[in-house]
Image (cartoon, rainbow, N blue to C red; front, top):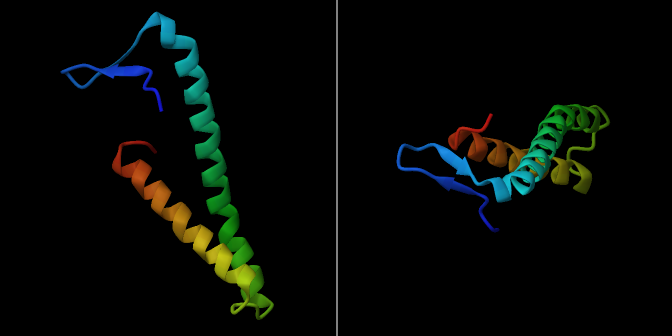
Length: 85
């Protein structure tokens, strides 16, 4: 990935005028992806509960959904670790 920001000694980030439009677009894409991740995290427990109520805890669908929940949790924790919430 080509970096569009420059980190200054003080810890602040800088974007040159020539990179501004691309930086805004990438930020928008990131925000969309983050919102999608968080929406998924809200729906997964409902999916798992529905599968549990139907006695499908041993199905591939249940296991894949659980794996998605764990993977998403790891991504969210990674973002939180880096100050993105």
